[in-house]
Structure formats: structure tokens, C-alpha cells
Image 1 (cartoon, rainbow, N blue to C red):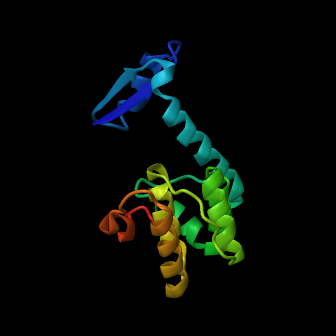
Image 2 (cartoon, rainbow, N blue to C red; image 1 turned 60 degrees about the vertical axis):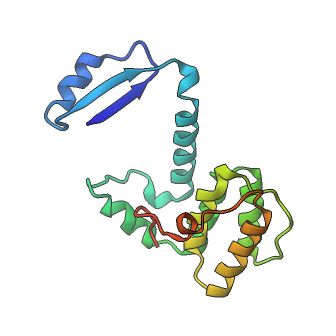
Length: 161
């Protein structure tokens, strides 16, 4: 079951349904007020910016299992991917990434809950064990609560490296 969430009242659902019928067996459309899709819009903007930062992704046609995307990412160095991540990061995340990229000493920055998944992804892009340990120690020290270690250290299936 795929649920398409949208906020445009002018969307031609009948045309979309015709187009989807031979592609997806079960789907549903859900209209929501604009205020409820702000977070999804924010994520979509971040994805577009990231795509622009990695030019090889422009015009990519994904297979259902995403192998094309994984291949494209693997052709880039981890350093370039980290640089691209800066473009989708919030202010504090950009500072931390810049520090990591430049191999400088981390300055104290409050790490919030909403950034932990982002930092976990970054952690899995770091090659050297010593750098990984230093990075995690910094995140852990500057996070107000207790980090779920199992979640942080477990590489997600969509991770690329």
C-alpha cells in the first residue's frame, strides 16, 4: 500500500490514478492542509539541494531497488559526500561537518535529538577508527540526553558506504 500525501486542491487525481493503475497495486491519496506537510517540504528541499551538490545524480533514473543510486554514491569519495551533506545540514550540523572535513578541533555545540540520525549517517562515512571514536565522543559529550548506542552505531540499510 502506497499513500500519496498532497496539499494541492487542483491535483488531477483521475489522471494520476490512470497512470498508477499498471504500476502500483494498492494506493491511496490523502489531502492535508499545507501546515501539515511543511516537514515533508523541508525534506524534499534538502534532497533537491543535495542532488545539485552531487552533479552525477542529476537526471539519474533509479531502479526499484535503488542500485543505480548506490553505485553513483560509491563513485564519490567520502570527503565529497560529507561536503555535499553540509548543504542539507542545519547551522550547527554544518559547523560540525566543516570541523570534521578540515580535521580541526571540535568546539562545543549543543547537539539536539533531531540531528542524531544525521550524525549517525556521518559517523558511518568516517573511515578511520580513531576519527570515528573522536567524532562519537564529541557528539555524546554535547548531546543533552543519553544516546541510544544501538541505534547510533547500527548502519541503516540505505547507508551507502
